Image 1 (cartoon, rainbow, N blue to C red):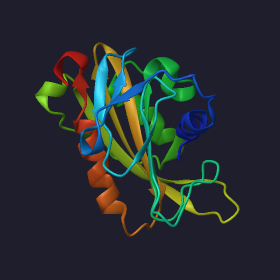
Image 2: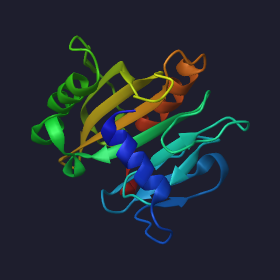
Image 3: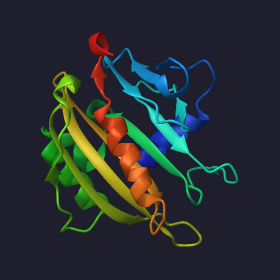
Length: 194
């Protein structure tokens, strides 16, 4: 999990009750995270938890026998963090396009040769210029395990956003977690269209 994603994730898990900036509407598989600040909604993956403490969603999943301890992702688990560019610091702060932000992110956390590819968002999302990249990154945890990160960057309402899926490198459920991630990000809708 990138340093920014860890900070976002910890903030969402540890923020004081009542400090909610987002909300969830609907029930069961029809739940959607609502960001009034950024004027979009996004589907909550079935079986995943969601934090409403930030203005953008943080989703997390752990198998029933596992749990999150601080920012450590349990075996079989994953986290999806979404962040607006206006809250970013570091190398990505000067990025003016999704491509530039993806490149800065990949340079900071992945190998220099990380490929950045176009990512198709549905037209009804009104998102544009989306790109995707993935890499393994060190977590500096006591067991030295790495995490795999898949990151999508896009433009929506003249603002830049990024979403990171993080899970333990070598996770057998990795492909299934990535399918959930892609479906979740493609569920983005303007508030007048959810």
